Structure formats: C-alpha cells, structure tokens
Length: 237
Image (cartoon, rainbow, N blue to C red; front, side):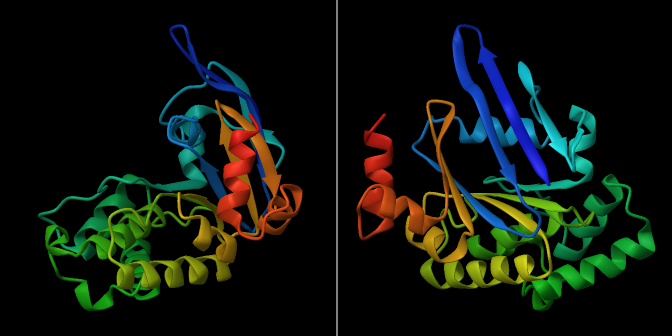
C-alpha cells in the first residue's frame, strides 16, 4: 500500500536517514521502534510531507507521491497538541476538516462520528485546553482522521498519559484498525506493541535493522520477552 524506498535525509554533514526502506500493507498495524535519535521522527515528517527527503521515493499503491500530495492520504497525530485550546472539540474538528477541504456538511457528520469512535462525544462542547492528557491524545487522532485518510500515523500517543487513559487509548486504536485504517504506530511501549502490532520495524542509525512479527523477533534473538529481544537487536549493531 505504502512503500518507503531508499529514503535518505542529510542535514549538513549528518545523515539522519540512510537508504531507509519498508512497506505498509493495507489494513495492518505496524509499530516503528528504535532508540532516541535513530531517525524515527525524521522519517515520519518526510512521509507526511512536513520535511523533504534528500533522495529516495515514497509510493502509494505503486505510484510515487509528491511531497505536497502525501497529506491527502496520510493523517498524522504528532506528540504535541495539534489543536486550538480555546476552541471546543467539535469546533476544532470542523476547522481542521475545512483546512483539509472537507465540505462543511460532511465535516459536521465526520466530527460526530469521530467523537463517538474515539469516546469523546461527552466532551463535544468542552474547550480542548480543559481535556485530560489522554483525551488530548485522542483529539489529536480525531483531527488527523477528519479527511478520512487511508493511513494514520500515531507518534507516541501514549506519552504522558495515566494508566487508565492508556488502556482507553489502545482500545480506540484497535477500533480504528477494525474499521480498515492502516496504522503506523511510533512508540517506546514494547509490551503494548507485542499485543497490538501485526509487524514491527526496528530502526537504528537511520536504517531498518529488523522488520517482521514480534514473535519472529523473539525467535531470532532467542528471547522469551520482546524487551530483551529488542535490546539484543539494537546491541548487535
């Protein structure tokens, strides 16, 4: 569905991405893992069109995607709040839907659907700044989904949320996947990754060093738990 091929990004004399290549299949949830500084954030920003690659290609259904066209089929929920605190949840969704060329009647319908899907209907008229951390992460997701993207990228959605909110968040992620959205999940949570992901991609120093199922990772490094297997994979470099 989405193919990242030989993606390279150079900042001055520093190579952040070094011929990075991987694929996302339709309807799957893939976790993108790696230590801090491995290039995950740079890769995501290029995939969604926020940064321009130095070289390489990004294809959607076999066709190369221009930088300006990527946001049409990809929704990105970043770590930072992507909404206006002094607008209500509903107002935020309508506003960002309009930015993504969703006609007003469709935006209103889509906003109600997403608030229900992400378990935020009871907060429809609440100012976004008054939400809990977990609800803010879900509002980020809703905004990213307003234009009905085929691919949703979640950048550490569980960061900074309490345990109960985290449980709700993962329930929502599972439900979004059930509806057919392809999800690329950037996370440090290895235990949740094991239960959620169809496949995992591990990055190190701007390259992919492993991509397969969590079970295959444990088998490859002869470990019983995914945390030890991940550690071994990175240490082998």
